[in-house]
Image (cartoon, rainbow, N blue to C red):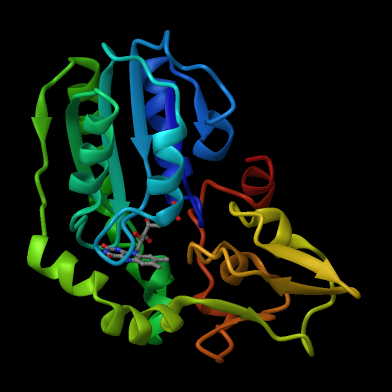
Length: 252
Ligand SMILES: Cc1cc2nc3c(=O)[nH]c(=O)nc-3n(C[C@H](O)[C@H](O)[C@H](O)COP(=O)(O)O)c2cc1C
């Protein structure tokens, strides 16, 4: 069983690839909390790195999962550059549930957060050049039951990122808000939000206060109505994994 969290499809595409090769099933973490997974012999976790750590959605959902104690557990992190503490944090949560992490690896993919810094993630497609080969190797290692951890513990930098002062300044850079002048109330943002944090009120989308900053709403809004840091994101800067379509995200 491969459990994923994904805002722009990188983690979903990688989960699907691994699942197909290993004859496994894919399930979003948000649904997995409603299933008993205690008979699974292999558990994969695929989620992005956010601010050099695991997304809040992952750290909140993981403790609620019913997981097998004896399974082969692996983590794959699709990230723009660095996994930071995102493996270490989840390894600790797994260990609190009595599970041993057997394998972890990161894989570089176009960085969906680049839009927050005025950079175009679509100009990072060169990352896909090494991706296929690397993903193939990761699959081979998992299939062979390899015990190996890509141990990117960024203790001091992770601690710095978690400081309230740093968070106050950095979090708004990637927190979406709806420009109601541009919103046509199509509901796409609400459907792709994995946190169910967007609702339609009076024909306009509105964000709640449970955003995990996955940026799905920003990248999938066809009207460029979801902005970050008070700025519109240009059409050509909108990114999602090329194999993942809107329907795949809505089906999660
Ligand atoms: C809020 C936020 C923070 C991010 N922080 C990092 C980071 O610290 N390091 C990194 O390499 N990539 C970072 N990224 C990029 C994502 O990890 C990367 O684009 C990932 O593949 C997205 O996965 P998804 O398409 O499944 O949502 C960040 C993205 C977001 C939205």
